[in-house]
Length: 414
Image (cartoon, rainbow, N blue to C red; front, side, top):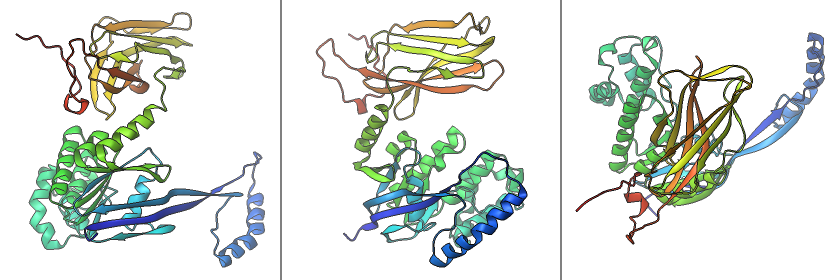
């Protein structure tokens, strides 16, 4: 069709990795010299034959992408989802012509701009004002276009007071805000975005998401890679799910996210299976939440057991409940107002508690833990999955989950 702006056909990207064999013995300078002398002939022969020259005894071929085919139409906002290492960033690098595919072909119609590395092209010695013009030119904007959008970029970045200060004196947040502001004010026909919303504070992330939403509403084509399923669902209408370098599925964004999250939940048991080490001498030995699955609105109980091989102290402790889109829903605060939790090798710590009612709507949730041990930094742990189901006791037909929010509140009315 004429409105297809990106078409990938059997796209593949292969990398060759070398594995160096270690014999475990001490290597002297004379050994290195002799080894290089012996391998000179083999390197020269490989170079003449066009083979890759890689240090190591073993070569392994790894396909970051393999047999990837899809079509994207003009004006579509498409999310690319998948686990780390699934090939999402590699795909965007091929589409933005940073790297060439090893097999297959891709056809692109229109000017492509990419937000893959926010801040690439910034010079630390130049001021914020100078870097706006420099970075804008690198990203393909004409000087008159940068001048026309200059005030809008500065307002978006919120760095007016520091505009004539070298960016090397900026905080990391200021640097990221300015870099994203320049890149976000491009006006390409096709925009590729790779996890840029993972930077900055929460308020700025929301502003970035709003800006990307505006781009999509203007009828331009957007490809968005992110682990934030809520952002994907908000911004995109379609999704492509990559698994081990291949397309597992593609289609409507809600269906793809649901299938992807269900596949991930099957890889995590609803039970806490083995101890987790919190520091050198403190372990989370056991965690239980019962019942699981639990009925929406019904009571739920939990148990935590900590053991230590030496005296240890827990200063802060909280159970965290997340939706499967990654949104934190609730925090069960288990801190003590008087003293911290103390335990040692002969005295474990067991905490039992419960909720009179768990008012979550039906669906899948993730349970985590936040803990601060002594003076160390806090640790976030992913523990188990929690399934909540709905069972009407009044014969009322339930609403579909996607229109009910996350809480099932008990309402009394006349």
